[in-house]
Image (cartoon, rainbow over all chains, first blue to last red; front, side, top):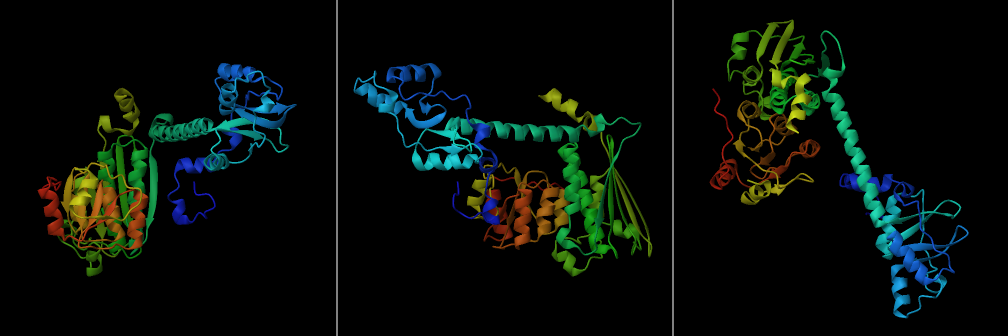
Length: 328
Length: 118
């Protein structure tokens, strides 16, 4: 733990989910509430019996709900060595008790474990009354439980996304994603395609399909950025058996479509080539990735590129989870 | 070949954070034209390139590239490193030139993942 250190943005990047949880979880959420306690007048032999039966290695010493000390297996060993088992617990307990507050984050307990080397910390509420006890084991179990529930939430989220087409009943269901692409916006070039690819994976598309759509969308997106006057729009319509992507702009249009389709032909300026684009392979790449491509353009009016990918039965978004279930 | 072995072979410097260095790299691909990469790279390859703008990372993401090696000791702009961290694609810089880097890896047994374009 980075106690006492200011968390900068850069450092925050290194903080793991477990560390985050140590700050998020309250001690009250992970502590043991059913505390076995001892009274000061209890004989050490009774304490020994309690530890053995309850399988614990320490217990707070309490008088009418008030914490007066703590007794551990080490104290018991000291007592046994002297053969003094009839003595009261008050003779062997430690009265310097370090406690933690129930409403504090788990990280406070972790810090104390690291600093003091004690094995357990009594937990008190605002009024100082004993409400529980916490060990490193409790923290580990609490963190694992929280991580497990994180994981389940994630599973539920994925489940929902990939069952979208199952859960909604209609004669024909489709999901439409729209992205506005600005001209010359190289800084965000590919961001829309990246979202498209991720959305398809979330919806249960297989990696091969997502990759083909991602590459085709990326080339189309770069074309809108490089060549259009005012940018354009990419629209993706996702249906269980068909993905249709359309890239539409309002100019300047393509003079000679046949020439534009020829591998290696490019009208891109030098600065575009420096970015690694403008090799004249964009449309060729798109054609390779999709099942059907229609390019329509009117000089001065604009260009409309439609790309279709047909999903075979086993690739269909609707059937995805059946396949996964069969595998597991 | 594991990513950590690959880095040793080309004396690479890792520029991204929290990389999974045990990742298996299936083969290699070298190009400066991103459209060439998109046209013929196969999944899980290392991409060797002389380009270092953010488009390299975007291209890598679209083409399921496992790691990116920037040749000739290029230090990319921060946006490229940020995007690589965000997309969790390891970014490595090597002082080797393109031919040298490809040669060393190929000699060490890393196959080519360049698909013949038909």
